[in-house]
Structure formats: structure tokens, C-alpha cells
Length: 423
Image (tube, rainbow, N blue to C red):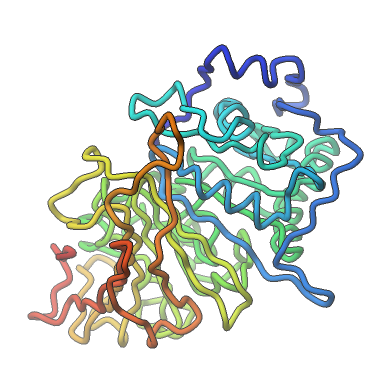
């Protein structure tokens, strides 16, 4: 995970330095920019009607942050200059470096990035505050002040780090319950890297550390493949309850850093493990899906269950993200099995003779900056993926260069999945 640094340019201090405060007590740390106690905040999520709300979920793939994903969350929160709004970052470790990145001016260049990327511009978009809570243990996740801050958030973002910390320190706490209530209330919830990993119904919890594609494909049951709520820590594959239940991410597992860390193979393994075609699987094979997200890319999921779609936002082309295994940068990959794997048992390689289906949703490589002084800015692609009906996709290239490609099939040549890659 690339850590967001906290360096600031002098002009930004003029915007917010007088309203910054920090608290380190009872194990948590709290800091903010703006005025979190503004009594006039009245933002209402745009996804709520009179009778119901639908989720707004931002899945960021890690690496340098995607400003357009945060602006989308602010807009979905119903934040305007008239309503105000509180944007809350939660994390188990790290700093408050997201505060100045989000509570900034439109078109302002991020001084922490040598690429000249833009900052979010939240102050110009109507945010009255950006707040960060570092919540490193279960006691802090029950603290009344922590719950107050999260409970009044207009948008919530889970930063990167180690998802095992989130699993161990937050799951089944009052904090966890508040995030679930926010999802149900239509409040935008997002994450990057480890934060993204925790947003699907299923999560690679990394309880024994990370796992790469060769290891996961060679043995889908090796000790590093720990998937919540498959209780792999006890070696009993019993469904115990997800970290979050998001209707539009039901039976989905997410995986960030996809291009830079060659994670297609391990996502094949994760998706297989959840399905009943593997020993101890809990869901029908055709119902389980995986979403892999490249760095500097975000998948934005909105709409009610049964009518949801995934849109793509991304930073401009960055050669650092290139990989010979992934021909299109700034992409998201959607994975499903066409039928149960031929072999998915402990101690043996994952084998499939029927085919693993993959769609690739890609952004265009570049786009002119809308700002006179031209920072590098993120953008929304025209291509999208129908997450409610994976079988009926409009596979095409759009006028802005973005595209939905596929379906590609893996495992059909000789049955072996080992060594698979996207072309």
C-alpha cells in the first residue's frame, strides 16, 4: 500500500490551519480540518427516496488516491455549499494525511505527489469538515466519542493498512454496526487497499499474512488464504457473518492492487473457495463473484440491488502501474465460474475444466485537464458494468476510449488454471 503523506503547501495552511485539532486518548487518535461541530449540516444522501435508500460504495484499488472517487462520494452524500457535510476517515494505523487532501480547493495540486495530481477540492464542494479517526483496538471501537464522530458522518472512508487489523479490532463492535447502519441509510462508504478488501460480503482477511497468485493457485487451502466469513482460522469452513452486508456486493469478494501485484490468479482461488464446488464452500458457484481493481483506479457502485451498476474512475496513465500480464491499465476485473471447479481441495492445485469467466472494464489512457494551471486530474469513464446481471453486458468501446471487454475464459485449455493471465 502506498501511504498518503501529510506534507502541505503554504497556501493550504491559509485555508484550514486554524481549525485543526488532535486528540490521543483511550487508544484512539482524532484530528480534523474545518468545523465538525457546525450545527447547520443538513446533507441527505441522494440515493434515498421517501421509503428506502440504496448503497453508494467506492472501491479504490490502492496506490495514489483517485480524487474523482472522493468527489463522487461527496456528491452521493448530498453535500453542497448550502448543506455542508462531514467526511470521516477511519483507519487502524497511520496518520491524518487524508484531511488536507480532501479538505482542499478544486484544481489544487497535491504537493505530496511528484506526478502533479490534483487534490479533491472538498472545501469548494461544500464539506464543512474532514475528520480522521485512528482506531487501533476493540476498546477504541466502542468509545462513545468515536461512535459520535462516525455516527454523524455524511460519508465514511476506510483507509489502507492491514485488513487483519480491521477484522480483529473492528468486527462485531459498535463501530462495525455503525458502518452497517450507514450503508443501509445510503451514506456513501468507501475504502482503499485494505479498506476495499473489507467491503464485499466476503473478505480476504489476511489473518496469517498476504498470499500471492502462485501460492493461492497451487493450494487454495493453504494457511494464508483466510476468507471472512469462512472461518479458516479454526479450519472449520463455517459461515459466521460478514464484516458488512452491502446488498449490491452480496456474494462478492474484492481485491485491490490488481495490476501491480498480479492478483488475477489469487482472485480465481478466492472465488472458488467461497463456492460449493470447493470443500467447505457456502454459496452456489454461479452466485459468487470477484472484483479486482487496479491501482489509481476506483469502482463506484450505485443503485438498488437488482438494478446496480459499476462505474470506473481513474487517474491518468502512469507507467509505474504497467505490467506485462495486464495489457490495460486503470481497469477492473469481474470474475465468475461457469460451473464448479474440477479440483478444489486442500493440498492440491486449483483445476477447472469448464471455464472461469472474466470481464475487463477499462478507462481511457488520458484526458485533458479542466484546470487552467493543469494539474493531473482523475476522470470518470463512460464504460460501466452491470453488477446486477453479469450475463447481459454491452461489451463495447465507448467514444472516450473506455471499454468493457470479454468475457474471457480461463481454465478451458487442458483444465489447469495455474499460470493464467489476462491478454
